[in-house]
Image (cartoon, rainbow, N blue to C red; front, side, top):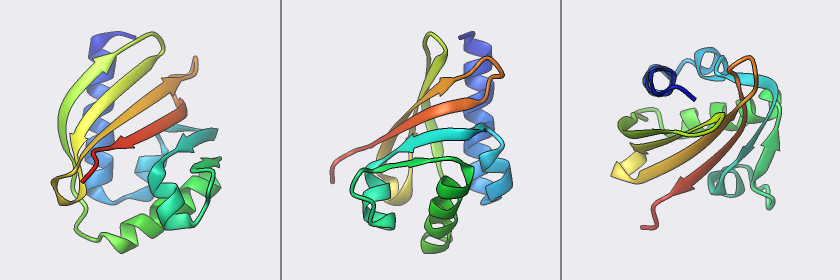
Length: 119
């Protein structure tokens, strides 16, 4: 993964979240992508912590955006890997989050794993 693509992706991803535009946020992902997050357990009462597809993840993110209307992310670090990017950012309440994104050949995210600082 080229560093320039990683940085451009991270900046656009952060900007999309800060715009609260769900269509823009979802534009980074393939139709059948898989999202794993401990917040899925909390917000969606889904014990697996995993959702698959834009419809399921979009419903989760729509609910999260309603719950946190002042949501704002601040990019801290971007790391490029092999067909993957890791982004560290400051999220809700200043909590540090790290997300790992795996990409398909079309440069859309196929899998994402979110990790959060323990408070």
